[in-house]
Amino acid sequence: MSHLGNSGYEIHEFYQGESGVDVEDLTQSRHAAFVAEPLVKTWFKIGCLSFGGAAAQIALLHREFVEERRLIDERSFLHALNLCMLLPGPEAQQLATYLGWRFSGVRGGLLAGILFVLPGALVMLGLSVLYVYLGTHPSVVSLFFGLKCAVLSLIIHAVMRIAKRAFTNKISFLFAFLAFLAMALTKIPFPILILTAALLAYYINPIWPSLFGVRETSSHSLEPINWIALSRRSLLWLVIWFSPLIVIALSLGVEHRLFDIGLFFAKLASLSFGGAYALLAWLAQTAVETKSWLSSFEMADGLGLAETTPGPTILVTQFVGFLAAYRAADPLSPLFAAMLGSLLTLWMTFAPSFLFIFAGAPLFERIKANHRLAASLQAITAIVVGVIAWVGLWFALHLFFSAVTTYETGFVRIPLVSWASFQLEAVLLSAFAALMFFLLRWPLWAVLMITIFAGWGLGYMDLI
Image (cartoon, rainbow, N blue to C red; front, side, top):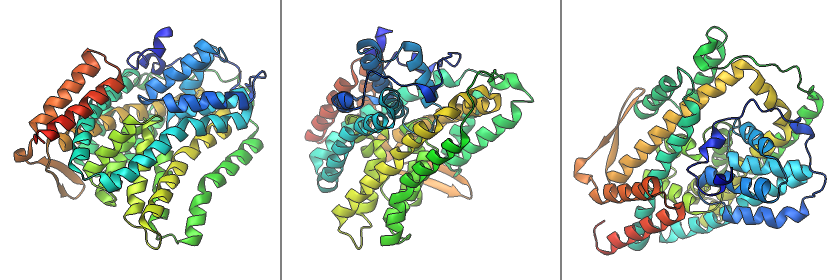
């Protein structure tokens, strides 16, 4: 599988699933020959080079630890990836955390998970500061214009990638289509869609097993779970996860914007199936439309920034937390509050990964062995396809039209555009980016750089 290190286009084979693979109990796997310290430089290097979204990041981990270092075999790597994909949150960072845990225990998992995110988080923090102070400069606006035209292709690619593993049963298309309509035309929150789909699949599957293509598998060979130890680990990591919120509540009060930010991103981290593009729909619903923390154009800019930095694309949440805290800082200074908001968002978004890996690994096999839970996960994946498709449409509307409004009545919400605000240059540049990305298959960094400078050139010629 050497092709995995070459391009994000073939990484979808990882997402096809190897659910039939039997490997040793994950709770017992360790690599005795290695400890955490010798791998610190390796994890930091991976964190600095992990551009291109989850597919490219997984390929990078595969090349480093399967092909080159041979610290883990192929089927164990694929098995671990499949398990991480059952979880909400960034699967690439969770996979890195799992690999660090497998090689060096909890200490190695902490180092791997933190260093995988740290370089990109530092870059995003710096870019957020520059955006606040320079984001309205005409040259900067032109650069972001080109960046957003390239990001649209990445959203389309995300829909295609996830659809390949989601549309494996009769009802997946229907679930995805209904999710798309619900996000586009109603005010139904993203978590409600996820929970409704999961419950429907859970209760329908025993009656109609072929509908979701999931049947009961044997779980007799699985090791028994130490529920006392599992409860202790879960409680410990829950306390660690929510400790910043407790500090904020005691020092600034539960009405402060920082507490609101932390609580919202804790909820989002718990239900962020499908990666950054899926949660963008919930971000747009809440941060833009409900809470008015930032505008739809700023949200698009944040996604563009996240695509240009190393680390998970979910770092777009850090940008949102920065702007939200900056605009409601009292009694803190705006910049200090913004930095706290950025760090708080990082914590609430990524800390659950350690909870899931360190405390939840013994449960993964049982989830896959239970046909009703497996059907629920299939339904959730189908919902995610529809949600990301809506994100693509939402993004395109705000990119191709400078004036987008919403007609609302009751639970109905219909996006409306002003044809007088149509931006032909955005359509042409987006098409050019898609040509480079899908047909010519140029590297992501090349597509981003070319479209960024093309946008700057259009701005220089006063065409945008």
